[in-house]
Image (cartoon, rainbow, N blue to C red; front, side, top):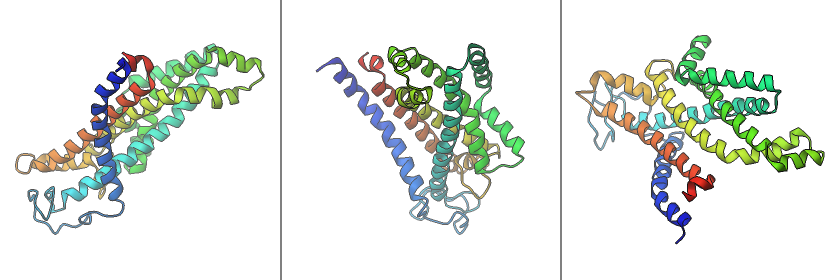
Length: 278
C-alpha cells in the first residue's frame, strides 16, 4: 500500500466524523423548515423540566420545548453561515482578483486595506455594522458577518491569483490573444477554487461562532428566533438548576464548528498533494 493510500486511510475516519457532525446539524436544520415537535411559542410545558419522553431536551424557564429551539437554532446557524460566506466570498473574491490585476500602487494599497481590516476581529466589525444599521435582525447579522469575513477571503484570493498569473500557461494564453476576462474565468478561478473552498469552509465555522456571539449579546436574530447564542444567554441564570438549557446548545455549537473544521481539513488533504503525500 502506497504512502498516499496509507495517509488517506488514516485520515478518512477523522474526516468522516466531520462529515457526520455537519450532516446531523444540516438534517435537523432542514427538517425544522417542515416539522418541529412543538411550536416555538408553545409554553404549555412546565418550567425547567428535565429531558423526558414529552420534551426530549427539556424545557426552558418559560416552558418552551428546548429540542424545538435546538432544531430552529440549527436552521439559523446554517442560514447565517451560508449567507455570510456567500456575501463575504463575492466581495472578497472580486476585490482579491482586482488587487492581483491592479497596478503596483493599487495592489499595495488594497493589500494594506486587507491587512488593516483583518487586524480587527470579525465580531467587532459585525457589531459596528449592526450598530450602523440601528437594528438587530437576521438579515443584518448575515450582512455584517459577510462584510467582516470579506477581507480574509480577499487577501487569500489576491495571493492565490498572483500565484496563478505567474504560471507559463497564463503567458501562453496572453500571447495567443486571450483577454483578461477569459483568463480569469477559464484559468484563474478554476485553479484557485479548491483552495478557496477550504478557506470558505473555515469562514463558515467562524461565521457560526460570530453569530452565536452576536445573539448572546442581543445583536443577532431577535425573538422569537431561537439562535443557539440566544439560548445560551437565556440559560445562564439557570445553569446550576437546569444545566441542560446551556449544555445542549453549547454542544450543538461545538459539534457544528468542530465538524466544519474537520471537513475543511479533509478538503485540504484532498486538494493539496504535498500535504496529502506527507
